[in-house]
Image 1 (cartoon, rainbow, N blue to C red):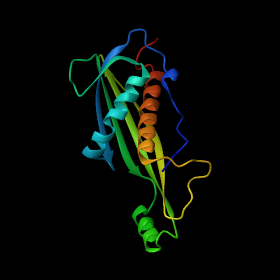
Image 2 (spheres, rainbow, N blue to C red):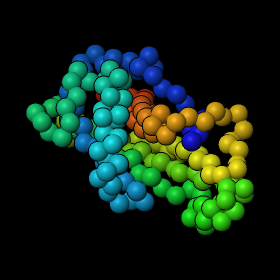
Image 3 (cartoon, rainbow, N blue to C red):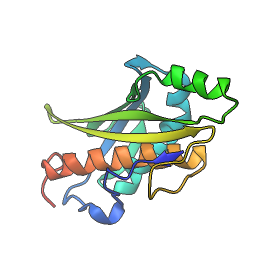
Length: 175
């Protein structure tokens, strides 16, 4: 798998700690083509939660309403198709025993919504993962990474970039 380089890498050092940090109740869902995907939600929830905590924007982050919080942070990541006829490409690769390879691109759309004191702000970020099948090279200049590392990188980058956009929009108050 290859993580698309188009989305900027955002780390904890890119955030400004709010003057009055709030606690957040985080709700998280992973979808596939707009439909809830319970398995993927379960597998990526902790990655998203860790990214939110890494941002340093909140003094406490709870998940799913375990206790009262100052605001609600809803994060939805949707795996959307980018490559046309991905199944046909995979079948074609299989029929040639991998001699004719293919590359499939999965798109991801992350929407983060912060609601605090009756005000709601939203940010949306796009990302992509490229997967090669059979005898096919990856995108030029990119190094392949193991599946788990690719998933962790994409989910973290989506969440951190969405939070950065919310911060830049003033969602968390002035530092």
